[in-house]
Length: 613
Image (tube, rainbow, N blue to C red; front, side):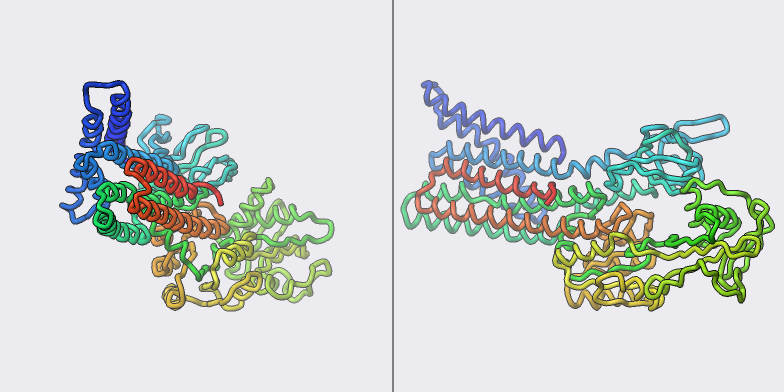
């Protein structure tokens, strides 16, 4: 809400309040200025501003339901009830102030993200460190981040260790440790000592800039639920005029007609829904869930089917060491140290995982020599004077049987989706490493939470072969598994499920982007920087945790329920008040304050979306 508009609303409310109080005092103190004149003078400026606003809306093709308040103020003065007019003026201007407060509170979390945009970077140049605007950073620049400073762009850590506070981006409350080569994201805070990192993207293409763009979209998009409420609110104007006319005609008392106009208000519709949805978006942002506008949160609240990609979504998205067996007399760390030292010379996808794991454990790696790599089988070389071979059973053991210390391979799920790396030292079997793309620890619990929230069908689609897909599915409660899917197959699966019921697609990779865009609501696991999927999605999970998908659905459902509750309760109370006013039980002045109380209750209820359920 612009400051100028807030100032106008505050000024009008202050004028209406002062005029109402002054008129009451004038009557009691015997002021020469008639009290009715004071109340009329307090009402006219508010009515004039409202008239201008309604006229502007009409010129652009919008009919404002605030016309009810304008009619009530004008009728109050015309019927010789200026106190009622002043009370309506207070109600209208006070409602605007209340809306300003509610929107400001609901948007605070989103606004804080935008206001934290990094602005300064320390770039290392030939002459030393130079402070430059963050937007001038180019990929490849070496940057220094001092303790407590924001990271201006995305990049890769150059130093051995760093500790980052990622709470503003991911919602994670505790600092995260990062190692050399790890990806760092803009907008996070250095929670440890100063460190160096190399920029991998310009500021406008980095994580935080993307978040800011999504926040701006979240604040401008309008949900179908809200648009429906706006259209329904338009019915209130003719309905109110008809009821007021009937009350006057049947009773012969024009004050009853005025009372009906005073208590009638579309505030539960025009205020409650937007405040509730903005509050829900803000609540989600605190948990590292970015919803691109009210339409996203509404669509998410309606889903009945969920389709998950496998790799990187239900699973961790890369090979992980799930078991390590060492020969008698050898420690597991020693086997890992030797293998990781050798793997430093390899470009295989498993090599980086093993090297990173060894460094994370604090193992001192040696430089390998005489390395020879056998494509698709493994590699061999000398590490610390010892001949190491690592790879397939055929490469390492040849025709020899498995050593007695090797446990039989796991039957079933893990064995079908795992990769075994055999290790020998100086020609003797020394170790067996089992690698797999492990199912996320919180995946099963997440699916159970989705079921409890009302999601009736859960599917998994993947480009992997059927054996690998069913090995993962066996550990999860899924209704259907579709394997060996191309991006087009995933889109077709989404379309088929959409024909049944509202559908959510959850994915993280480039090949998931078309399916995310095709679903009723697309949810991207964006913590790893999958730009295409994040741009195509309606909801982006900024932290690498699948349980946030279930939390996002829970927030969306609660937000829709609170918005609907506020609207129904508010309109119900207003309707009852209108009937009582029509029968003469509520005078205009009392009706104005009664309606203000209804508005306050409705908006306070809508603000519950900011809290936890």
